Image (cartoon, rainbow, N blue to C red):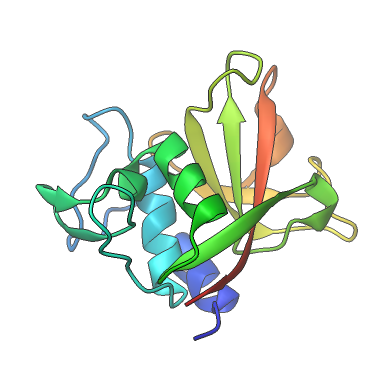
Length: 161
């Protein structure tokens, strides 16, 4: 099943400043950003992967994979997934598209702690014309370069199985 970027972006716009009641809100549990990104991917047609511990799924607050709501686990899942669900590669800013993900490091790149969903890009894409939606500090159509002093990690969603 192909990844439907338009549906994923529409979901991001719809829920950027609100919470979908079908999912727990992680705002008081370390942040809701990656949970929101996972919801966007799922809205784009990405099937859940129920592999214990290393999969990507959400049934409830108590029944979910670490990759559903954790920045680093989502990165590991997307870049190593050979099974069901979404898969991605790390790219440069110029290779990013709406429906992709940017992750931020606030400590020089030794770890990443925030996930953003790309809703629009310029041509060619760069940090000044990539617009994102995210939760925790709820935003929609926020310029990527409004985060200063961070390291960016760009993930291009290749598809979903």
